[in-house]
Length: 83
Image 1 (cartoon, rainbow, N blue to C red):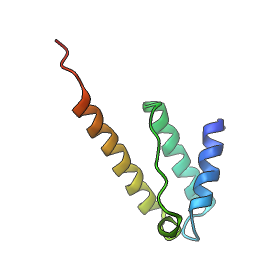
Image 2 (image 1 turned 30 degrees about the horizontal axis):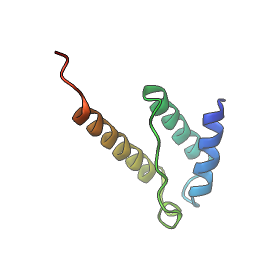
Image 3 (image 1 turned 30 degrees about the vertical axis):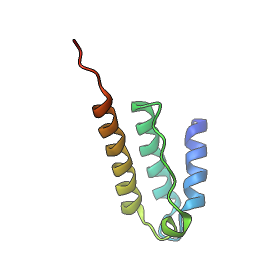
């Protein structure tokens, strides 16, 4: 397990509530590791704890998807033409 995975897991545990068990945290850590491998600059801004404590795995996945989509959108807007 990489340092990134350990840090991500600890952070997710801190921001998660009763709806997220260790299996869901591990799954989400795997997803975030994959995002990081695809784009080393990717960072997930953490939501307020007051909100995320009530989230389940589906809410977290939707949040990661939305953050990833926003990153892709910014990349597409900033690309230069290849000629």
